Amino acid sequence: MLISHETPLKLMDKSRSYNDYDYALVHLFETHPQYYQFFKNSLASGREVLLDNSIFELGTAFDSNKFYNYILDLKPSYYVVPDVLEDAQQTIVSFLNWENEHNLAPISHIPKIGVVQGKTYEELATCYSFMNEKADYIAISFDYSYYQQAALGKNKLEKCRNGRVKLIRDFINDGIWNETKPHHLLGCALPNEFKEYKSLTRAIRSIDTSNPVVAGLHNIRYVKDIGLTDKLSVKLCDLIDYSPTEENIANILYNVEQFYKLILL
Image 1 (cartoon, rainbow, N blue to C red):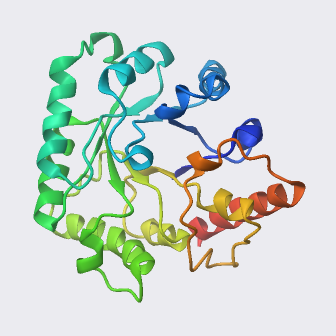
Image 2: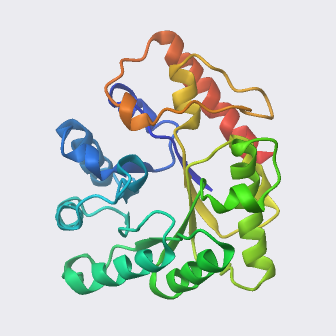
């Protein structure tokens, strides 16, 4: 699995030493030109850049026309087609609208990532099947409300952690999962989730999570072989201008190292 941890601006150059690829939130392009330039530089140096539509940060996907223009200019390695949180039908409509309302010929060489959305297993399965047919790459979120009804766990975080594993396992068992298509896992509740996939599927190509970075910025260190059992309700985009201390940086690097070891368990 390729891993990327979103990072504050003042550490982004250093992040190339611990990130396998670079993960861009499009809404920050509007307010932070140096953030945008970082990804231009990454692409120029041959690194992969995944451009997200910022729906998790904004609640709704970034303006479709502006997003299209950023794709034209940046030419990322991949981009996430605008979706609608937990709404399978509207996410499918949004994907079709994206194809019908924009001239995709100039960006046809850039793989499209389709996000699975829905509130029930049936809706998630329907959306997955659509994305399997139409998208080049499929993304699955860490926090569907479905997990709270379907998964075991002592609290919301454990249910999110176990819920995505269960969803993917159910897709595999029901013959829905496409082992030949690349998948991306959006975010995480608890980092030890990712050790489950080594024996479950080889189709997960990439993940993104700011978890070890946000924890490090609060001087919280991962526990060996576990990671964290709790999660701060802080989005990295809200810390984008934060100036990390030497202690913060040491904790971030330690957490990132432990995160990689969790996946290798």
